[in-house]
Image (cartoon, rainbow, N blue to C red; front, top):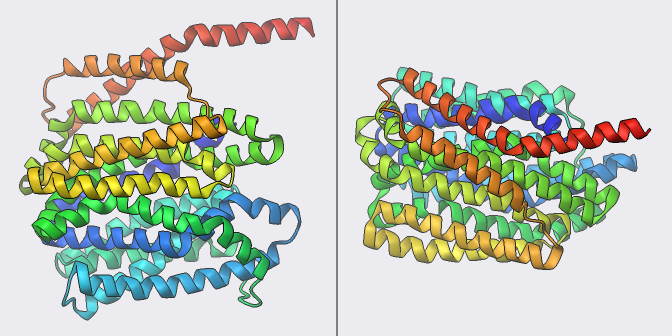
Length: 480
Protein backbone atom coordinates (compact mmCIF):
# COMPACT_ATOMS: atom_id res chain seq x y z
CA UNK A 1 0.00 0.00 0.00
CA UNK A 2 2.84 2.36 0.86
CA UNK A 3 4.44 1.92 -2.56
CA UNK A 4 1.12 2.25 -4.39
CA UNK A 5 0.18 5.49 -2.63
CA UNK A 6 3.68 6.87 -3.18
CA UNK A 7 3.40 6.21 -6.92
CA UNK A 8 0.01 7.96 -7.08
CA UNK A 9 1.45 11.02 -5.37
CA UNK A 10 4.66 10.89 -7.43
CA UNK A 11 3.82 13.44 -10.19
CA UNK A 12 2.92 16.11 -7.63
CA UNK A 13 5.91 15.25 -5.46
CA UNK A 14 8.34 15.56 -8.38
CA UNK A 15 7.05 18.26 -10.72
CA UNK A 16 6.22 21.01 -8.21
CA UNK A 17 9.42 20.85 -6.13
CA UNK A 18 11.48 20.34 -9.29
CA UNK A 19 10.09 23.58 -10.68
CA UNK A 20 11.07 25.33 -7.45
CA UNK A 21 14.62 24.10 -7.98
CA UNK A 22 14.56 25.26 -11.60
CA UNK A 23 13.21 28.65 -10.54
CA UNK A 24 16.02 29.12 -8.02
CA UNK A 25 18.57 28.45 -10.76
CA UNK A 26 16.87 30.72 -13.31
CA UNK A 27 16.50 33.63 -10.89
CA UNK A 28 20.30 33.76 -10.55
CA UNK A 29 20.39 34.69 -14.26
CA UNK A 30 17.49 37.18 -14.19
CA UNK A 31 17.84 39.18 -10.95
CA UNK A 32 20.65 40.50 -8.77
CA UNK A 33 21.65 39.30 -5.31
CA UNK A 34 19.64 42.03 -3.51
CA UNK A 35 16.41 41.14 -5.30
CA UNK A 36 16.96 37.44 -4.70
CA UNK A 37 17.59 38.15 -1.03
CA UNK A 38 14.26 39.99 -0.70
CA UNK A 39 12.36 37.19 -2.47
CA UNK A 40 13.81 34.42 -0.31
CA UNK A 41 13.28 36.36 2.93
CA UNK A 42 9.62 37.09 2.06
CA UNK A 43 9.03 33.41 1.31
CA UNK A 44 10.79 32.40 4.53
CA UNK A 45 8.71 34.94 6.48
CA UNK A 46 5.49 33.42 5.18
CA UNK A 47 6.67 29.96 6.18
CA UNK A 48 7.02 31.23 9.76
CA UNK A 49 3.60 32.91 9.70
CA UNK A 50 2.03 29.75 8.29
CA UNK A 51 3.44 27.81 11.21
CA UNK A 52 2.29 30.36 13.76
CA UNK A 53 -1.24 30.94 12.49
CA UNK A 54 -2.38 27.85 10.59
CA UNK A 55 -0.10 24.81 10.76
CA UNK A 56 -1.52 23.85 14.16
CA UNK A 57 -4.97 23.51 12.59
CA UNK A 58 -3.57 21.74 9.50
CA UNK A 59 -1.93 19.12 11.72
CA UNK A 60 -5.17 18.67 13.65
CA UNK A 61 -7.09 18.18 10.39
CA UNK A 62 -4.51 15.73 9.09
CA UNK A 63 -4.67 13.68 12.28
CA UNK A 64 -8.38 13.78 13.15
CA UNK A 65 -10.50 14.75 10.13
CA UNK A 66 -11.07 11.07 9.41
CA UNK A 67 -13.02 10.77 12.66
CA UNK A 68 -15.44 13.48 11.57
CA UNK A 69 -15.95 11.71 8.26
CA UNK A 70 -16.65 8.37 9.92
CA UNK A 71 -19.14 9.95 12.30
CA UNK A 72 -20.85 11.88 9.47
CA UNK A 73 -20.21 15.01 11.51
CA UNK A 74 -18.32 17.23 9.07
CA UNK A 75 -20.48 20.37 9.15
CA UNK A 76 -19.28 21.60 12.53
CA UNK A 77 -15.70 20.90 11.45
CA UNK A 78 -16.18 22.91 8.25
CA UNK A 79 -17.63 25.94 10.06
CA UNK A 80 -14.72 26.05 12.48
CA UNK A 81 -12.26 25.44 9.67
CA UNK A 82 -13.54 28.45 7.71
CA UNK A 83 -13.32 30.76 10.71
CA UNK A 84 -9.76 29.64 11.50
CA UNK A 85 -8.70 29.99 7.87
CA UNK A 86 -10.11 33.51 7.46
CA UNK A 87 -8.57 34.74 10.72
CA UNK A 88 -5.25 33.20 9.77
CA UNK A 89 -5.14 34.90 6.37
CA UNK A 90 -5.85 38.31 7.89
CA UNK A 91 -3.24 37.94 10.62
CA UNK A 92 -0.59 36.59 8.26
CA UNK A 93 -1.11 39.49 5.86
CA UNK A 94 -0.73 42.05 8.64
CA UNK A 95 2.39 40.48 10.12
CA UNK A 96 3.96 39.90 6.70
CA UNK A 97 3.62 43.61 5.94
CA UNK A 98 5.14 44.61 9.28
CA UNK A 99 8.12 42.26 8.84
CA UNK A 100 8.63 43.39 5.25
CA UNK A 101 8.77 47.05 6.24
CA UNK A 102 10.81 46.60 9.42
CA UNK A 103 13.26 43.77 8.59
CA UNK A 104 13.32 42.60 5.00
CA UNK A 105 12.98 45.75 2.89
CA UNK A 106 12.41 48.97 4.86
CA UNK A 107 10.94 51.69 2.69
CA UNK A 108 9.17 49.26 0.35
CA UNK A 109 6.77 50.82 -2.11
CA UNK A 110 3.10 49.93 -2.59
CA UNK A 111 3.81 47.42 -5.37
CA UNK A 112 6.05 45.23 -3.21
CA UNK A 113 3.71 45.46 -0.22
CA UNK A 114 0.71 44.49 -2.35
CA UNK A 115 2.58 41.62 -4.01
CA UNK A 116 3.71 40.33 -0.63
CA UNK A 117 0.15 40.34 0.75
CA UNK A 118 -1.18 38.64 -2.40
CA UNK A 119 1.53 36.00 -2.18
CA UNK A 120 0.83 35.33 1.51
CA UNK A 121 -2.94 35.05 1.05
CA UNK A 122 -2.82 32.73 -1.96
CA UNK A 123 0.06 30.62 -0.64
CA UNK A 124 -1.82 30.07 2.62
CA UNK A 125 -4.88 28.84 0.74
CA UNK A 126 -3.02 26.51 -1.59
CA UNK A 127 -1.01 24.95 1.25
CA UNK A 128 -4.13 24.30 3.30
CA UNK A 129 -6.10 22.92 0.36
CA UNK A 130 -3.19 20.54 -0.25
CA UNK A 131 -3.33 19.24 3.32
CA UNK A 132 -7.09 18.80 3.25
CA UNK A 133 -6.86 16.94 -0.02
CA UNK A 134 -4.14 14.68 1.36
CA UNK A 135 -6.09 13.66 4.43
CA UNK A 136 -9.12 12.88 2.26
CA UNK A 137 -6.94 10.99 -0.27
CA UNK A 138 -8.03 13.40 -3.05
CA UNK A 139 -4.81 12.95 -4.96
CA UNK A 140 -5.97 14.92 -8.01
CA UNK A 141 -6.70 18.05 -5.97
CA UNK A 142 -3.42 17.68 -4.09
CA UNK A 143 -1.55 17.32 -7.37
CA UNK A 144 -3.07 20.49 -8.86
CA UNK A 145 -1.98 22.52 -5.82
CA UNK A 146 1.52 21.12 -5.79
CA UNK A 147 2.11 21.39 -9.55
CA UNK A 148 0.19 24.41 -10.80
CA UNK A 149 1.39 26.97 -8.21
CA UNK A 150 5.16 26.45 -8.65
CA UNK A 151 5.00 25.78 -12.40
CA UNK A 152 2.64 28.52 -13.53
CA UNK A 153 4.00 30.86 -10.86
CA UNK A 154 7.53 30.48 -12.18
CA UNK A 155 6.37 31.13 -15.74
CA UNK A 156 4.23 34.13 -14.76
CA UNK A 157 7.03 35.62 -12.66
CA UNK A 158 9.50 35.22 -15.50
CA UNK A 159 7.15 36.95 -17.94
CA UNK A 160 6.53 39.84 -15.54
CA UNK A 161 10.25 40.27 -14.88
CA UNK A 162 10.98 40.37 -18.61
CA UNK A 163 8.10 42.76 -19.39
CA UNK A 164 8.34 45.13 -16.42
CA UNK A 165 11.67 44.70 -14.66
CA UNK A 166 13.77 42.48 -12.34
CA UNK A 167 12.11 43.60 -9.10
CA UNK A 168 10.98 41.22 -6.32
CA UNK A 169 7.33 42.32 -6.50
CA UNK A 170 6.92 40.88 -10.00
CA UNK A 171 8.28 37.48 -9.00
CA UNK A 172 5.94 37.38 -6.00
CA UNK A 173 3.01 38.59 -8.11
CA UNK A 174 3.58 35.78 -10.58
CA UNK A 175 3.34 33.18 -7.84
CA UNK A 176 0.26 34.86 -6.37
CA UNK A 177 -1.54 34.69 -9.73
CA UNK A 178 -0.73 31.01 -10.14
CA UNK A 179 -1.68 30.09 -6.58
CA UNK A 180 -5.04 31.81 -6.89
CA UNK A 181 -5.71 29.93 -10.12
CA UNK A 182 -4.80 26.60 -8.49
CA UNK A 183 -7.27 27.11 -5.63
CA UNK A 184 -10.06 28.41 -7.88
CA UNK A 185 -9.68 25.41 -10.19
CA UNK A 186 -10.24 22.77 -7.50
CA UNK A 187 -12.73 24.59 -5.28
CA UNK A 188 -15.83 23.00 -6.91
CA UNK A 189 -14.42 19.53 -6.15
CA UNK A 190 -13.35 20.16 -2.57
CA UNK A 191 -15.46 18.96 0.33
CA UNK A 192 -16.16 22.16 2.32
CA UNK A 193 -18.82 24.60 3.49
CA UNK A 194 -19.31 28.36 3.02
CA UNK A 195 -20.62 28.86 6.56
CA UNK A 196 -18.51 30.64 9.17
CA UNK A 197 -20.82 30.44 12.18
CA UNK A 198 -21.32 29.13 14.70
CA UNK A 199 -17.77 28.12 15.50
CA UNK A 200 -17.81 24.81 17.35
CA UNK A 201 -16.02 25.37 20.64
CA UNK A 202 -15.38 21.67 21.24
CA UNK A 203 -13.66 21.27 17.89
CA UNK A 204 -11.63 24.44 18.41
CA UNK A 205 -10.67 23.39 21.94
CA UNK A 206 -9.55 19.97 20.74
CA UNK A 207 -7.55 21.53 17.91
CA UNK A 208 -5.85 24.01 20.23
CA UNK A 209 -5.03 21.32 22.79
CA UNK A 210 -3.43 19.17 20.10
CA UNK A 211 -1.97 21.93 17.98
CA UNK A 212 -0.88 24.64 20.43
CA UNK A 213 2.45 22.96 21.17
CA UNK A 214 2.91 22.59 17.42
CA UNK A 215 2.75 26.38 17.05
CA UNK A 216 5.79 26.68 19.29
CA UNK A 217 7.42 23.61 17.80
CA UNK A 218 6.75 24.72 14.24
CA UNK A 219 8.12 28.19 14.92
CA UNK A 220 11.24 26.68 16.46
CA UNK A 221 11.57 24.29 13.51
CA UNK A 222 11.26 27.21 11.10
CA UNK A 223 13.87 29.07 13.10
CA UNK A 224 16.26 26.13 12.97
CA UNK A 225 15.89 25.96 9.19
CA UNK A 226 15.86 29.68 8.39
CA UNK A 227 18.07 31.15 11.12
CA UNK A 228 21.13 31.08 8.82
CA UNK A 229 19.34 33.28 6.26
CA UNK A 230 18.45 35.99 8.79
CA UNK A 231 21.75 35.75 10.67
CA UNK A 232 23.61 36.31 7.39
CA UNK A 233 21.23 39.15 6.51
CA UNK A 234 21.77 40.82 9.88
CA UNK A 235 25.53 40.34 10.14
CA UNK A 236 26.61 40.56 6.49
CA UNK A 237 23.76 42.38 4.69
CA UNK A 238 20.91 41.55 2.31
CA UNK A 239 23.22 41.09 -0.69
CA UNK A 240 25.16 38.43 1.21
CA UNK A 241 21.82 36.85 2.11
CA UNK A 242 21.05 36.70 -1.61
CA UNK A 243 24.36 34.97 -2.35
CA UNK A 244 23.82 32.56 0.52
CA UNK A 245 20.22 31.88 -0.53
CA UNK A 246 21.18 30.14 -3.78
CA UNK A 247 23.37 27.36 -2.38
CA UNK A 248 21.38 27.06 0.83
CA UNK A 249 18.03 27.06 -0.94
CA UNK A 250 19.10 24.59 -3.62
CA UNK A 251 20.42 22.13 -1.05
CA UNK A 252 17.37 22.36 1.20
CA UNK A 253 14.97 22.02 -1.72
CA UNK A 254 16.88 19.11 -3.23
CA UNK A 255 16.62 17.23 0.06
CA UNK A 256 12.95 18.18 0.37
CA UNK A 257 12.22 17.02 -3.19
CA UNK A 258 13.81 13.66 -2.43
CA UNK A 259 11.90 13.29 0.84
CA UNK A 260 8.58 14.29 -0.68
CA UNK A 261 8.71 11.34 -3.07
CA UNK A 262 7.40 9.22 -0.18
CA UNK A 263 6.26 11.54 2.63
CA UNK A 264 2.87 12.52 1.20
CA UNK A 265 1.61 8.95 1.37
CA UNK A 266 3.62 7.78 4.40
CA UNK A 267 2.17 9.60 7.41
CA UNK A 268 -1.54 8.99 6.63
CA UNK A 269 -0.78 5.25 6.47
CA UNK A 270 0.84 5.38 9.92
CA UNK A 271 -2.16 7.32 11.24
CA UNK A 272 -4.51 4.66 9.86
CA UNK A 273 -2.50 1.87 11.52
CA UNK A 274 -2.54 3.81 14.81
CA UNK A 275 -6.32 4.25 14.68
CA UNK A 276 -7.13 0.70 13.56
CA UNK A 277 -4.46 -1.54 15.11
CA UNK A 278 -2.66 0.43 17.81
CA UNK A 279 0.84 1.65 18.59
CA UNK A 280 2.82 -1.49 17.73
CA UNK A 281 1.42 -1.66 14.21
CA UNK A 282 1.94 2.08 13.75
CA UNK A 283 5.59 1.78 14.82
CA UNK A 284 6.17 -1.01 12.31
CA UNK A 285 4.64 1.12 9.57
CA UNK A 286 6.72 4.12 10.67
CA UNK A 287 9.89 1.99 10.48
CA UNK A 288 8.99 0.96 6.92
CA UNK A 289 8.28 4.61 6.07
CA UNK A 290 11.64 5.63 7.52
CA UNK A 291 13.55 2.99 5.58
CA UNK A 292 12.03 4.09 2.29
CA UNK A 293 12.61 7.76 3.13
CA UNK A 294 16.28 7.23 3.95
CA UNK A 295 16.69 5.08 0.83
CA UNK A 296 15.80 8.21 -1.15
CA UNK A 297 17.64 10.84 0.90
CA UNK A 298 21.07 9.21 1.24
CA UNK A 299 21.78 8.70 -2.48
CA UNK A 300 20.49 12.22 -3.15
CA UNK A 301 23.04 13.69 -0.74
CA UNK A 302 25.84 11.53 -2.12
CA UNK A 303 24.93 12.28 -5.74
CA UNK A 304 24.83 16.05 -5.24
CA UNK A 305 28.17 15.94 -3.44
CA UNK A 306 29.78 14.01 -6.29
CA UNK A 307 28.32 16.28 -8.99
CA UNK A 308 28.51 19.59 -7.11
CA UNK A 309 31.13 21.19 -9.39
CA UNK A 310 29.26 20.28 -12.57
CA UNK A 311 25.91 21.41 -11.14
CA UNK A 312 27.26 24.82 -10.15
CA UNK A 313 29.32 25.38 -13.31
CA UNK A 314 26.51 24.48 -15.68
CA UNK A 315 23.45 25.85 -13.91
CA UNK A 316 24.34 28.81 -11.70
CA UNK A 317 25.13 32.33 -12.91
CA UNK A 318 28.78 33.32 -12.50
CA UNK A 319 28.36 35.86 -9.63
CA UNK A 320 26.76 33.16 -7.45
CA UNK A 321 29.04 30.21 -8.30
CA UNK A 322 31.82 30.37 -5.73
CA UNK A 323 29.45 30.73 -2.78
CA UNK A 324 27.04 28.10 -4.08
CA UNK A 325 29.85 25.56 -4.62
CA UNK A 326 30.98 25.94 -1.02
CA UNK A 327 27.52 25.87 0.54
CA UNK A 328 25.56 23.36 -1.57
CA UNK A 329 26.98 20.08 -0.13
CA UNK A 330 26.51 21.26 3.46
CA UNK A 331 23.02 22.52 2.75
CA UNK A 332 21.77 19.28 1.17
CA UNK A 333 23.25 17.34 4.09
CA UNK A 334 21.48 19.47 6.69
CA UNK A 335 18.28 19.33 4.65
CA UNK A 336 18.50 15.55 4.43
CA UNK A 337 19.00 15.19 8.18
CA UNK A 338 16.06 17.50 8.94
CA UNK A 339 13.80 15.68 6.47
CA UNK A 340 14.63 12.31 8.02
CA UNK A 341 13.95 13.67 11.48
CA UNK A 342 10.71 15.45 10.58
CA UNK A 343 9.18 12.60 8.56
CA UNK A 344 10.46 9.69 10.61
CA UNK A 345 11.64 10.37 14.17
CA UNK A 346 9.34 13.30 15.02
CA UNK A 347 6.21 11.58 13.71
CA UNK A 348 6.21 9.20 16.64
CA UNK A 349 5.31 12.16 18.88
CA UNK A 350 2.40 13.17 16.64
CA UNK A 351 1.03 9.63 16.51
CA UNK A 352 1.06 9.37 20.30
CA UNK A 353 -0.33 12.89 20.85
CA UNK A 354 2.86 13.92 22.66
CA UNK A 355 3.41 17.13 20.76
CA UNK A 356 5.30 18.74 23.64
CA UNK A 357 8.18 16.37 23.00
CA UNK A 358 8.24 17.57 19.40
CA UNK A 359 8.57 21.10 20.80
CA UNK A 360 11.55 19.98 22.88
CA UNK A 361 13.31 18.58 19.82
CA UNK A 362 12.69 21.65 17.68
CA UNK A 363 13.81 23.81 20.59
CA UNK A 364 17.14 22.01 20.60
CA UNK A 365 17.41 22.62 16.85
CA UNK A 366 16.59 26.32 17.19
CA UNK A 367 18.98 27.00 20.07
CA UNK A 368 21.79 25.15 18.32
CA UNK A 369 21.08 26.92 15.03
CA UNK A 370 21.18 30.34 16.73
CA UNK A 371 24.31 29.73 18.77
CA UNK A 372 26.28 27.89 16.12
CA UNK A 373 24.94 30.20 13.39
CA UNK A 374 26.11 33.43 14.98
CA UNK A 375 29.50 31.96 15.93
CA UNK A 376 30.01 30.27 12.56
CA UNK A 377 29.05 33.36 10.56
CA UNK A 378 31.30 35.65 12.60
CA UNK A 379 34.28 33.28 12.30
CA UNK A 380 33.92 31.71 8.83
CA UNK A 381 31.30 33.88 7.10
CA UNK A 382 28.81 32.21 4.74
CA UNK A 383 30.58 28.86 5.00
CA UNK A 384 30.28 28.99 8.78
CA UNK A 385 26.53 29.62 8.56
CA UNK A 386 26.12 26.49 6.43
CA UNK A 387 28.29 24.40 8.77
CA UNK A 388 26.21 25.56 11.72
CA UNK A 389 23.04 24.35 10.01
CA UNK A 390 24.48 20.82 9.69
CA UNK A 391 25.55 20.73 13.33
CA UNK A 392 22.18 21.92 14.61
CA UNK A 393 20.26 19.46 12.43
CA UNK A 394 22.40 16.53 13.56
CA UNK A 395 22.05 17.31 17.28
CA UNK A 396 18.25 17.68 17.05
CA UNK A 397 17.91 14.45 15.04
CA UNK A 398 19.88 12.53 17.65
CA UNK A 399 17.70 13.86 20.47
CA UNK A 400 14.51 12.97 18.56
CA UNK A 401 15.74 9.46 17.79
CA UNK A 402 16.70 8.77 21.40
CA UNK A 403 13.37 10.04 22.74
CA UNK A 404 11.37 8.03 20.21
CA UNK A 405 13.31 4.81 20.81
CA UNK A 406 13.29 4.96 24.62
CA UNK A 407 9.74 6.21 25.21
CA UNK A 408 7.69 4.83 22.33
CA UNK A 409 9.73 1.90 21.02
CA UNK A 410 10.51 3.58 17.73
CA UNK A 411 12.14 0.94 15.55
CA UNK A 412 15.30 1.86 13.69
CA UNK A 413 15.48 -0.18 10.45
CA UNK A 414 19.15 -1.07 10.86
CA UNK A 415 19.23 -3.88 8.28
CA UNK A 416 17.79 -1.53 5.67
CA UNK A 417 20.23 1.23 6.61
CA UNK A 418 23.23 -1.03 6.07
CA UNK A 419 22.03 -1.94 2.57
CA UNK A 420 21.33 1.71 1.75
CA UNK A 421 24.80 2.75 2.92
CA UNK A 422 26.50 0.05 0.84
CA UNK A 423 24.49 0.88 -2.30
CA UNK A 424 25.16 4.62 -1.88
CA UNK A 425 28.88 3.94 -1.44
CA UNK A 426 28.91 1.91 -4.67
CA UNK A 427 27.11 4.76 -6.44
CA UNK A 428 29.60 7.33 -5.15
CA UNK A 429 32.56 5.20 -6.21
CA UNK A 430 31.14 4.82 -9.70
CA UNK A 431 30.44 8.53 -10.09
CA UNK A 432 33.94 9.40 -8.89
CA UNK A 433 35.36 7.91 -12.09
CA UNK A 434 33.26 10.14 -14.35
CA UNK A 435 34.95 13.13 -16.06
CA UNK A 436 33.49 16.62 -15.63
CA UNK A 437 30.23 17.11 -17.51
CA UNK A 438 30.65 19.33 -20.56
CA UNK A 439 26.96 20.19 -20.91
CA UNK A 440 23.62 19.88 -19.19
CA UNK A 441 22.92 16.81 -21.33
CA UNK A 442 26.03 15.14 -19.91
CA UNK A 443 24.94 16.13 -16.39
CA UNK A 444 21.55 14.47 -16.91
CA UNK A 445 23.29 11.33 -18.18
CA UNK A 446 25.54 11.31 -15.10
CA UNK A 447 22.52 11.58 -12.83
CA UNK A 448 20.94 8.66 -14.66
CA UNK A 449 24.13 6.59 -14.38
CA UNK A 450 24.34 7.27 -10.66
CA UNK A 451 20.72 6.28 -10.17
CA UNK A 452 21.27 3.10 -12.22
CA UNK A 453 24.29 2.09 -10.12
CA UNK A 454 22.35 2.70 -6.92
CA UNK A 455 19.26 0.79 -8.04
CA UNK A 456 21.35 -2.15 -9.29
CA UNK A 457 23.31 -2.25 -6.05
CA UNK A 458 20.25 -2.01 -3.82
CA UNK A 459 18.52 -4.67 -5.93
CA UNK A 460 21.41 -7.10 -5.51
CA UNK A 461 21.59 -6.43 -1.77
CA UNK A 462 17.86 -7.12 -1.37
CA UNK A 463 17.81 -10.16 -3.67
CA UNK A 464 18.22 -12.77 -0.87
CA UNK A 465 15.45 -11.10 1.13
CA UNK A 466 13.15 -11.04 -1.89
CA UNK A 467 13.83 -14.70 -2.65
CA UNK A 468 12.97 -15.64 0.94
CA UNK A 469 9.73 -13.65 0.75
CA UNK A 470 8.71 -15.25 -2.53
CA UNK A 471 9.67 -18.71 -1.29
CA UNK A 472 7.62 -18.23 1.88
CA UNK A 473 4.55 -17.21 -0.13
CA UNK A 474 4.93 -20.21 -2.45
CA UNK A 475 5.08 -22.59 0.53
CA UNK A 476 2.06 -20.91 2.12
CA UNK A 477 0.05 -21.24 -1.12
CA UNK A 478 1.03 -24.92 -1.44
CA UNK A 479 -0.06 -25.64 2.12
CA UNK A 480 -3.45 -24.09 1.46
